[in-house]
Length: 374
Image 1 (spheres, rainbow, N blue to C red):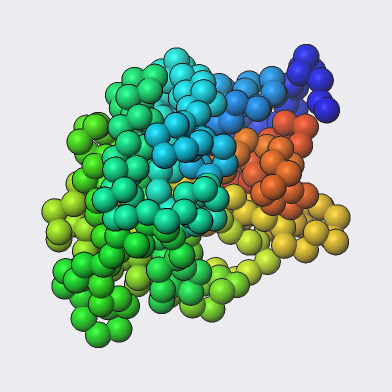
Image 2: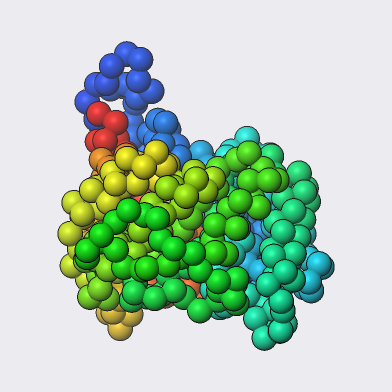
C-alpha cells in the first residue's frame, strides 16, 4: 500500500505556447506545466471518476486537476438491499466530496442490464406493477437521500441497454415491462429495432419527477470508431435509434454518454467520432465522454516509452475528435493506473502512473484542450 503521506513531486519538461486573445484564460507568459487540466478546459467539463476508497495521492490529483467529478452507484453491488431498502452511504459520501469542492457531479448509474442488478431482484418473480413500484421507489429514495436531487448535475439514468453486438437488447429484468413501437423515424439500415423497451422511457419519466437536473443515456462502443469488435457501426446505429426514439417520444432526456474505453493496439478512425458527436448535438442534447481510458492490450510487453507515446497519441486524437464534434465534457475512468483490481489492472490505462506521476497521455490531453481552445 502506498503511504498517504508521501509528497507528490512532479519533475516536468517546460513548453511555451503561443498567445491567445486577451480575454482568454491562457497567456503566452504562462508555462503549461504550471497549468492543470481544468485551467485549459475553458467551458468544457474535464473530470475524473471519484471513489471513496481513494488515498491521499488520488485525492490530491483529483482536487488539483479537474473541474467536474463523477461518482458511481450500482444497484447490484450492495446498494439495493431489498424491494424498498437501500444503502446510499458510500454514494452520498462521494457526492458530498465532489459537491463540497464546488464541482459539478455526474452520477452513474440507476438502471441497466442484469450484470448490475442484485440477485434477489433479477431472480425474483414480480408483476409489472411491482416492477414499476420498485423503479419509482429506487429513484425517489436515491434522489431524496442527501438532497442528491439538487447536488447531482447529471444523472446516468440508463446504462448499457444494448448488447455488445448492437442488434439486441441487453438482458435485463426490466425488459419484462414490455416494448413500444419505435418512433425514431429512421428507415432502412439505420433502423435496427422495430420496438424499444418500455423501461427506458419510464425510468427517464420517473426520474424527471424528482429532479430538474440533466438526465443521461449511456452506452459503450457507440462512438463511431473502429474497434476490436467488428460491428461497432451497428452499435452506433442502434444507440442513435434509441436516442432519437426517446427524443421524438418527448422523453425528458438531456444528454448522452459515450464510455470511451479504448485499446491502443486496435486501429481507430478518430474522425468518425466527430461526426457521431455532431449527430447527437443536432438533437439538442449534451454529449459527454464519460469513461475515458486507453489500455495496453499486450500485458506481456513491459511498459516503455514507445507504448507510452502511442497511448498519448490515442488520447490526443480521441479528445480532439470529441471536442471538434462539440462534446461538452470528458471524464477519465479513474485517476491513476492500477487502483482498481477489477478494471484494466496492469494495463496502464490512465493519465497518471501508479505512483501519481503524470504520463505522456496527461500532456497529450492537456495539449488537445489547448490546441482546441486556440
